[in-house]
Structures are given as C-alpha cells and as structure tokens.
Length: 310
Image (cartoon, rainbow, N blue to C red; front, top):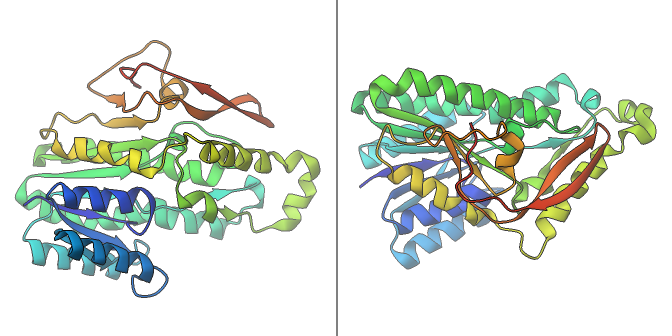
C-alpha cells in the first residue's frame, strides 16, 4: 500500500488531501500541530471519518517548527507502514501588512514554518526515500512564489525560497528515483486568510499614513475572491496532488499551477513547456492585477486548460 504523509492536515488543502488519498486506498498519516489541544476537533473529525468509512488514515502530532516533533512523527509513520512514498509539504502561514513594519522576528517566524519546516521534514524523510530509491516530495507553494504583491513581501519571500529549495531537490534527488515538485495554488477559500500575521510595528505603519492603506486593499482582493458565489474551495487542489502521486516517476512536471488566471500571471508570453509545468484548471478565478505600486484591482479571465507556465 502506498503511504502518504501530509503536513498541515487540520484544515484546507491538507485536510482535503488526507481524506481523498485515504478514500483512494493510500495509507495516510495526516499530521498537525497539537492534535489533542488546539486541533482536537480536526483530529476527532478525521478519526471518526476513518472509523466510519474504514479508511487507512492515522492522525499524528507534527510541528514543522520542532525538529524532534518532525523526527518522531516520521519515525512513527515508517515504523507503522514500513515505507514512506509521498510527502506533501503543506503546512504554512501567511502575513500581510506594510513590509517595513514587520520585525526581523516576524520574518523568522514565517520562514520557520514555510521554509525551515520543509527542510526539517525533508531531512527526516529523505534518508528513507534514498534507501528505497523512490519517493515523491510535493511542495505546496503559491502564485505568490513567482509574483510579488505589495503588503505580501514576507509571505512571497518565503514562497520564493521554497521554490528554490524544491528546484535544487529536483536535480539532486533524481539519481535516487525521487521526484521533487511544486504545486502553486491561486486564491482559494481556506482558513489561511483568516489567520494572516499582521505587521507588529504599529508606529511604522502609522508613519505611512494613507500611503499604507494598500494592505487593506490587498486583503479586500482576497475577501472578494473567496466570497464570490462560484469561488472554489480548497478541495479543488486535491486532484492535482492525486494526479502527481499517480504519475510514473520521472514524468511528473516540476511546477503545477492550479487556477485559471495564474498561468497568465507567471507565464512568459507565448511560452509552453509541458515537460516543465502546466495549469490544472480552466475555471475563471479572481486574480490580482497590478495597475500601479499602490493600487490593486480584481479581474477575471478564462484560459484554455492547456495553458502552461515555464
């Protein structure tokens, strides 16, 4: 039985992926922080689902900011299953506000989850994958890993770093039969928008006056996008994870852009390279269109499902 470990499985992409993979017959280790505390409700819901549907799904405690927690969870999963085939690095946090007003400590906290957390998980799983000479690392990035927006610098920077890591892993792990890929979702209705870290230095924000209100406009874009009647939920990304997991090793695209307008934002004009990356949806979605450095608007477009990004 193919075994999957998913980080950040309490909500959003990770939660839907855990359910979908288990229903597809994969053995799933759905991991989250504090499953008997702050995430107790999510743990119980997954365990009840597994019992009701007789699914091979187990919830584990894993805090990507704690090396010992990561090592313990990975060791437990390998001991229980005997192998680890797919890892979905999904855990992440977001931040929004005037860039100057974020403290170095806040940047460290964001990178500790979005970048160093991935490093910890991959360091824990890769010795096993290298020994078995197979495996798949799916890194959940974002369109923000390729397109920078004002007020999102800390988040974008962490996703740019993640993209660099995933690309380096891709080359270095190829001789071991291990694939490293990226999934870049657009704006989806998930809890991450409700938990965005604000800038801590209120005095710096105040010094910007009205010039700093673009942070509110960026948030308005997210709210408008996710509140739209046809706005997709996080479950739309799960089929992409499944498709990547079920493709033959060595044939997977490095980058998959999920949601229609994102390829137009990140694709050099007219370029297509199906071996490198592709778009997973042709659903019309709100996207941010930069009109000038202090103004953002919402637009919608439909692209052919064959559109790809380089």
